[in-house]
Image 1 (cartoon, rainbow, N blue to C red):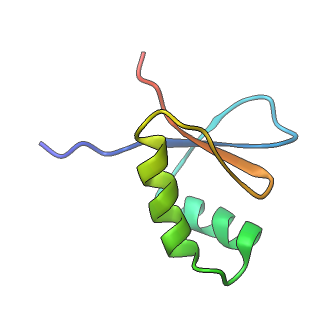
Image 2 (image 1 turned 30 degrees about the horizontal axis):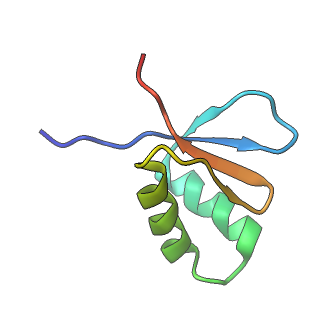
Length: 68
């Protein structure tokens, strides 16, 4: 069984967290950091949120979705 990590995002002006797919995560990171290795940054974000951290990249925060 393969577990898929679900990541949520929130821009600084938003009050709610939004479920976000990988393609959109990469696009959001590219918008925030430009050409400075967005794929590597996405890998770092995925690794960090596994441990319950909230990671901020530019104006956007990332966290792992908590199952209820």
